[in-house]
Image (cartoon, rainbow, N blue to C red; front, side, top):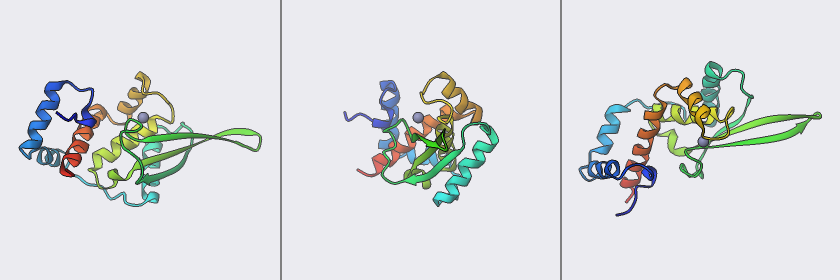
Length: 165
Ligand SMILES: [Zn+2]
């Protein structure tokens, strides 16, 4: 059987259950019931404001944001779920870190919860490069349901994938 790429690493019985839901055409409905709320963050400047507001609320003292953009070329799973680049430049003799956040375009049309989840993920990388314990502590500090949302995002991407075949 073809592996479910967004759920690789999860137990077989769980993947089997998800396949069942796909075959019964129920996965989309389950997700829509739970994550019916969409968002209005359409443009890159709206995305910047959205991420900045989250940062102001939770990570005020982290390094300033650089560019924040939707990226249609980004493969969601390539870097876990988003990407973050630390670009260091020497400015006026001092090293200034600028942080660029790119969010895959799939999130533009995704439920509001998933955009928040990915924004939280990328913001946590302002302070932690690795996906380690303190990274996930930052994520759950910003969004207590982070882990559930990340799992459900995997289901959502699996659902989109199944619809494209
Ligand atoms: Zn990451």
